[in-house]
Length: 500
Ligand SMILES: Nc1ncnc2c1ncn2[C@@H]1O[C@H](COP(=O)(O)OP(=O)(O)O)[C@@H](O)[C@H]1O
Ligand SMILES: O=P(O)(O)OC[C@H](O)CO
Image 1 (cartoon, rainbow, N blue to C red):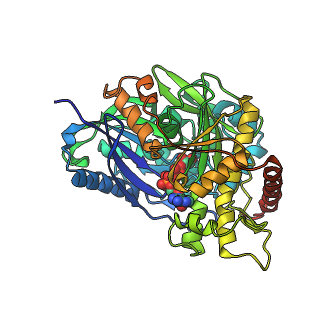
Image 2 (image 1 turned 180 degrees about the vertical axis):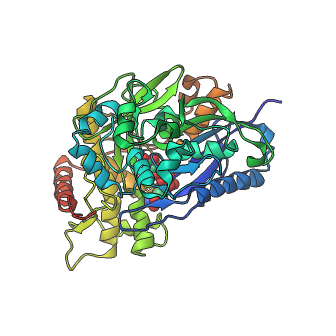
Image 3 (image 1 turned 60 degrees about the vertical axis):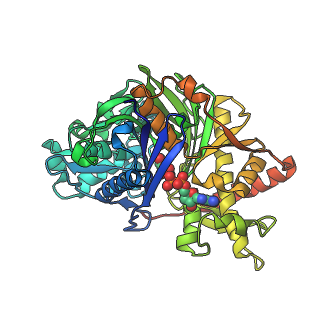
């Protein structure tokens, strides 16, 4: 009997999703559940890897129950994940030695400073395409080995394994048989040489991380192993696609040609441009990263990583409690014509591209007696668009490509006011596709291609469908004035945190 579905597991920063796609790329069903965020100290963020596994397993079971499909009809599983988040576990017991340290966590700022003081910044940059920043996995692994009692000895004995969330989930799904990652995830660790396609001995020595902990790095589309029946409701299904969530979204948006770009508005906001086999050395604060390994080669991308985007809206909801739900931000922002000079810089986890300031912290500036809740909500929404403009400017400068339109996706692109302001402040049309779950779609495509469920990228590219194009409606003079205000606001937030 021919298979009917591909299942994508989207392990994001705040939730786990399982999504079932049919052959026409339609969503057949979705199950999603949030998990706990731990903030043990200012600037620190952790997840419980065991809770992530149980949440992910729970949404798989829920999806199968509610769609009433026969799991035998699933051709393959694709995994996409929050990148960089680091878990270290004991291969004998399967137990993590510490909570997973999340990509947003700033605790390794001092380790980064030390690497820079040793003059290693350029070495890391050239070999990994990244900057020395607490964002990436390498310094997080070092922190765990240095700070968890007995961890270094156990790692040196070969008992501990490292993984990002893709690796952890595959290890769990296969009941401890398979310890792998894909090129796109490896390229986010600060330990992987994106030119030689190898874990880099010099970088591992600089970070003091034993090579025995590292997963095998494989292409983004191939069968890595099958689910152990006990860990997948009684069925052995091939796990056949893996990519970091931002690279998966690039794939799901069918950005298969050099020069094609997308921007994903989730917890953070990540703009990636496909650069094919070309490795750009950014002069403007962007990262060079591996887009995917496919068809016997890797392709590269330029990336602008914005740490806080939708998370700022969540903060309005959960921190300030001035919203009941994220979508209500559109209603409140629409109650005012503009922010009346208020800017919100959501540097809660420092600033990523193009500033790379680990010590920046959030700021709201331009407040007057006339400032209302609506102005603050609007300023927060607009901060997503301004940060995107910062990154697009850097990307156009690096690539010397002027974007004709920006493809967008992710939860926050449902917000029409945000999308219109984005087009206005960029002066470039913004294209929202019908499927905004492009991260999961990309993972499904990679997994489907590996098992012949789909046959080619060309076939997949034809399925991309526009929902709405937002055209620029703002005069250049107004755009320049507003953006000038944003740049001044950013300077107020920078280099704020003096102590670690
Ligand atoms: N209508 C909306 N307007 C603004 N922000 C929104 C809206 N809907 C969702 N969000 C924000 O988008 C994020 C959820 O998007 P999602 O793609 O699910 O993120 P992630 O995969 O990072 O968890 C949340 O941070 C939420 O605050
Ligand atoms: O969970 P998301 O969708 O915000 O993505 C997080 C990124 O992968 C971090 O690099």
